[in-house]
Amino acid sequence: MDYQIVQEILTEYELIVDSCEQARERPGEYKEQKKYYSGKKKNHTFKNQIIVLPDGEDIVDVIAGVPGPKSDISLFREGQKGFDSNQRFKGDKGYQGEPSVKTPTKKPKKGELTQSQKDKNKQMASDRIFVEHLIRLLKIFRVASERFRLNPQKYEQVIMTICGFVRFRIGALVLPM
Image (cartoon, rainbow, N blue to C red; front, side):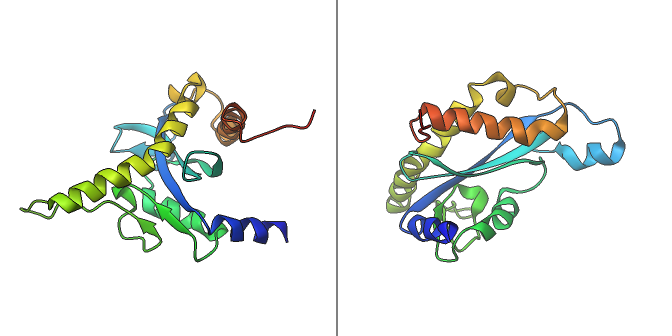
């Protein structure tokens, strides 16, 4: 019952979504190496996706420890099942093609963007910057920014703990005394 109330309240906001990758130790087995190798980062990586409230007031959802090559949009589609179908999001160009995500306008092939499109993209970037700031707060912790050398099965637990610290730091998490 409470979960449905929270979903209803969240539909009033246009949430901001973004993902980031973190290098990990190279797996020993070939199949495992293939699974985690990200061509974008030229390394074996974990991918994390963070969904936040509009002004970066709180972290709404975190998906941590997904293999690096998974695209942002497919990761989003899997995680979107926990949200209301009317929920609106803002994302970067990695989420292009998803109807519930508002994304910047791409420059057409052999063409240019109009000034109004550029202004709209700039405004959208300034609205989205809050998720980038929260990702930076996560990466202040060395275990979340440098190569992850601990047991890979503990990755999600470590990232979720760091998200709790960040929520406490920004004042979103208030513990009873």
